[in-house]
Amino acid sequence: GCCSIANLTVPNFAGLATASGAPSFVSVGLGTQNYTCSAAGTYTSTGAVANIYDIACLSGTPAFDTIQDTVLKSGAPKGAPLLGKHFFINGTAGLQPKWDFTASQKNANAFVVAKKDAAVNAPTGAQDVPWLQLSSVSGGLATAVYRLDTRLGVAPATCTPGTPDITVKYSAKYYFFGSS
Ligand SMILES: *[C@@H]1O[C@H](CO)[C@@H](O)[C@H](O)[C@H]1NC(C)=O
Ligand SMILES: *[C@@H]1O[C@H](CO)[C@@H](O)[C@H](O)[C@H]1NC(C)=O
Ligand SMILES: *[C@@H]1O[C@H](CO)[C@@H](O)[C@H](O)[C@H]1NC(C)=O
Image (cartoon, rainbow, N blue to C red; front, top):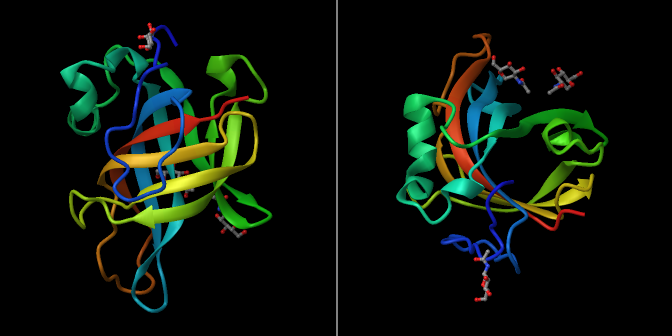
């Protein structure tokens, strides 16, 4: 990106293991968490899809702290170029999260498929999806990915079996460490 994040530190890991060193990318994601209604009458996750925007140039400004709220209200952020997409693939270990920056980075290896290592409840409340710590299973985009500062994305507590799949809008900051 255009702005250095060499000295950026993550303000709050909320009890997740902290990453060492500076992130290689800092971003905001805006998209949906997707759910299907199970026979038991509860929603289960079928993945998510989000656009991922580079917020390096917002770091050190007040806009950085509130970008996850701003995008929910106003959509794609100003001054934050699209880095790529977050979505899920049906991998060897079932549904696996992937972040794909290959187009923006002009690098076929600029993706990461990850596994979840830890989750903590969002400090902001049960309306927001948990904060996550993930590690790479393939790709060169990152060795570690964090989903922090989440907003919304949680499914209703119950559903009527047979009703259609739902999507729930969400945003979050994604920090990437250890690009190769
Ligand atoms: C990062 O911090 C170091 C040490 O304080 C400093 O020399 C360097 O200029 C800083 N880099 C940026 C991009 O702010
Ligand atoms: C999630 O829902 C969005 C919006 O309907 C859709 O475009 C996307 O393909 C869905 N993704 C998954 C993994 O189900
Ligand atoms: C994963 O595979 C299952 C079973 O084939 C399918 O129902 C589901 O839509 C797939 N999900 C994604 C995100 O491709």
